[in-house]
Picture 1 (cartoon, rainbow, N blue to C red):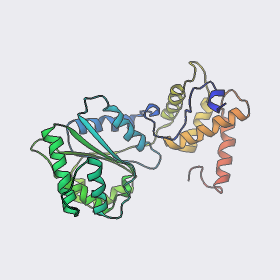
Picture 2 (spheres, helix red, strand yellow; picture 1 turned 120 degrees about the vertical axis):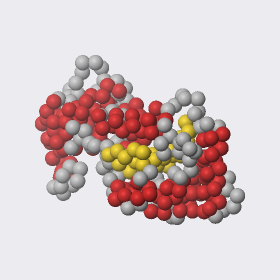
Picture 3 (cartoon, rainbow, N blue to C red; picture 1 turned 90 degrees about the horizontal axis):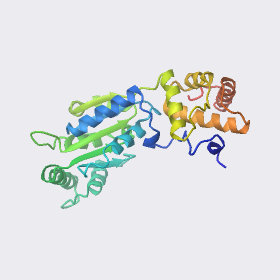
Picture 4 (tube, rainbow, N blue to C red; picture 1 turned 135 degrees about the vertical axis):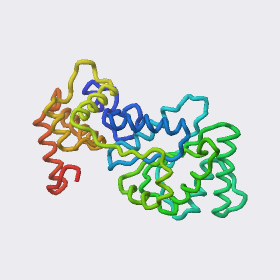
Length: 281
């Protein structure tokens, strides 16, 4: 039997997979999601969402896509999980395949023109909204950013033909600011922040509830939550990892809940594994 079943849960509450149903909408995440929806519905073009590792950007991207389901196929989403390509040509070739565009020949220009025709046909003739979501945006090279800048030039008098949402780590920021014509095109620039202590406790309760925790039952004491926040500094991925380990420890010791003492011992063990460095250094 899985550990979560022993705790009265119906599924894993602290998986680090980007499941939208376990996406906790903190103030920062809620604002980012709301502003992304507005930018896409108004067809404003480029949205940049940045944040440190583990702040929930990937789950935010999946939640965004999930929010547009069932809207008569008006919104067509395309997702690139890892934009690691050897050249601009390879990147544009991937985009033509993704969009279903057919280049006349095989040059970089042919691929670019095929994408333009495809965007015009779907965006103007068919009145669809085309959205390209790129995760791990910090991996985009200057040549790929330049290729995207060119695609953002395709527009009507009223709207951009391509809606581009890039989710990346903070190291992307200085790179895009060096390309002035690129960052100037961003209709939305937003930095996702970690949770505060209150939101950390709310995230933990939310995930446990989503995983089927019976009403009125508590698995983490307030002291445990304080210790989790102190160790993770409110980063959702770190919280999920630490809470998963804490629940496993509770099952091993047949404890009804995780308290501050258990968390302190667990955090000490994690620090030892990292050679005395911070728990998530």
